[in-house]
Image 1: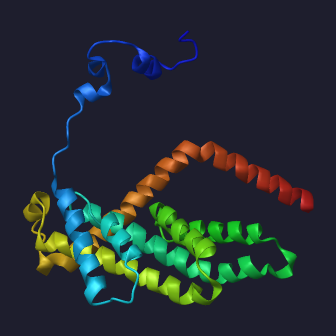
Image 2 (image 1 turned 90 degrees about the horizontal axis):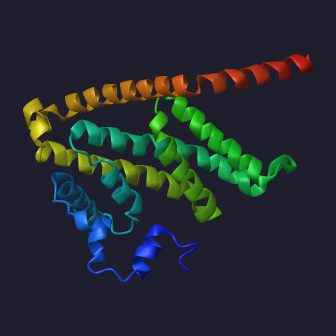
Length: 240
């Protein structure tokens, strides 16, 4: 009669005393409230208060997202996460402005989905060109958000505002690291006076991190890239 049931469903149906002890809940332990949790909450709180009382007419959504992105276990990690969001939002936001018009007007009779994918490919290419491979995802997010949720008359002001909001949220979160440095940051001497120097060092490590990631990607997908290049070369030769 139990045919077709999964193991968990069979356990749920079974009349077994204290059967909860046979499930993963038996070993469940509530995580402790760590520094990352209160830093994130504080960054979001400050950002929300700033937008509520100083920028009351602005939507805080992208600023809050930027603040959350820029929180990590230390300043360098927070910077890496935050700069990903900033670069991605900047690239995706600037490129979606012309491609929104192309997508909606469909010039030369080219279908909208062609313009959609072309714009996305350009977003990805620009992030590669900037050495910000890991910024592709946040860049794609704002690209699709604007394409599908923003009206024509609001594209330019909305996009520029969201770029600025993201940068503001990231900056607030990073400033918390110099005001309330983690143990690792205190040992490194991170403070308000060293903010600019730490930012430059974190940016250098961010570039190196992306280069390492790209190298690993080439090692993993190198054969496929070579096959693709071979196919493109054959197509060009046939045209000649």
